[in-house]
Image 1 (spheres, rainbow, N blue to C red):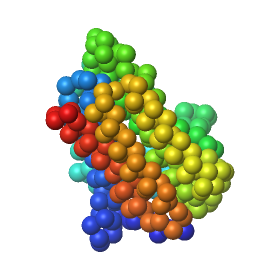
Image 2 (image 1 turned 180 degrees about the vertical axis):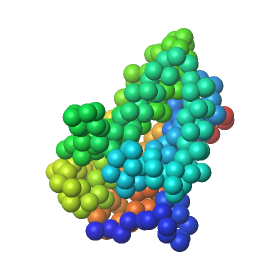
Image 3 (image 1 turned 180 degrees about the horizontal axis):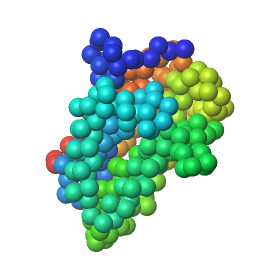
Length: 282
């Protein structure tokens, strides 16, 4: 089993992993990428808010509390600053959102919270969504597409014809990209998933087929990008996909956590940088 990074680690990579700063950059970069691909003016403030919201969500998912109520108490007692910061981000998102975004954010928050925590309503109990066999990866992809593609799109109130025409292809292209990146993470998590008797797609089909399926997703993502976007944007996406391909080829059970969180997740940031170059100079 690969040794995982711990938030209390002493190295720079361990601290970045523990604080989920790289994940926050991914949320920011993915949102910026969506504005570029929609041919919309970039709302950097909203991208920053989504980046921080991503950081807070991942921090919450790694909390070892048994329920959301226990997690609430834990943060008040042990990390009140992060707790207060989370509410600042929530309030900013609420003030920033229009009607469509407000409604959309409500369901997205429920999915994000109950992904890792049980839902209890009287006698009714639904286990954490992440522990349903083979559903984990699809939930992750859905939340990332919803937060970084649909949420920015809803800022336009469906008014812009270009954005409307690109919504379906961009949803498909980004979902394929996120799916290609998320699949190999189940290889890393195979041992921990076995301990909770969780069956994942990657564990079912094995390492080689997982790498092959991820590669297929990157290929189809590039094909959609070719037909949907400007040439400069297509080239930026293709270069980032080539980078992802080599990272995916290097995936194995012995790789440490930062290989995934640093390099694989970092490819989202790398793609955003390439798209920004194409956006401003292409």
